[in-house]
Length: 218
Image 1 (cartoon, rainbow, N blue to C red):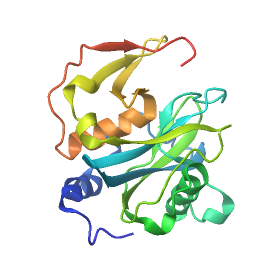
Image 2 (image 1 turned 135 degrees about the vertical axis):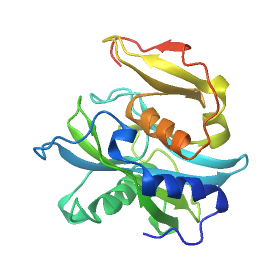
Image 3 (image 1 turned 45 degrees about the horizontal axis):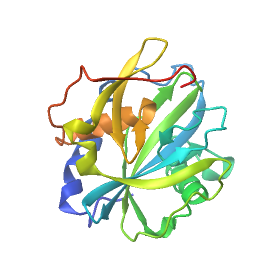
Image 4 (image 1 turned 45 degrees about the vertical axis):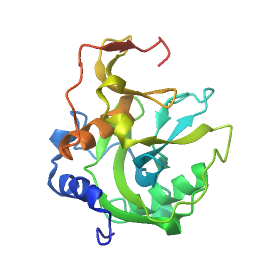
């Protein structure tokens, strides 16, 4: 893992990752009992036709867990990934991204990790792994049974106030959301993007009263 040779615009993300505290990322933190399934996601930044961008995927609608929801590539750690407390999440994030999107991990430079977070509904303890897509390769939905599509989103669209909203779950809780690339990004993924945008200093004032309701099965 190294931050050497990154484009200048990623500097604020590197500094944010080094300084941010877990409580600044989310109110849902791993249980002190160490319960939960260790997992990792790859937060992959690239350079596209419209400048900096993020790689996302949309989960297949028929999946029981988070079906139809946009997300980062990622998943649970396998034993061969190694120690969850050290390099295991890095290996898992790259392995899962390759399995889900077909990208070549050799072209990805890992430059940081964010604090581990917790997803209560699924019991996953998630390490967001930050990567720079140094040598982009073609991506696709490798398994249509698990992934509906793979796409990139310009950071400019994620920071555009017109594309920001507050998603309201039928159970009452609310959180940040992004309406980009014909998708509603919400939940864990939107929360991580929101915090990165905020602590990197990229956030622009947006209408937090703009509400987007999620349907009953979200």
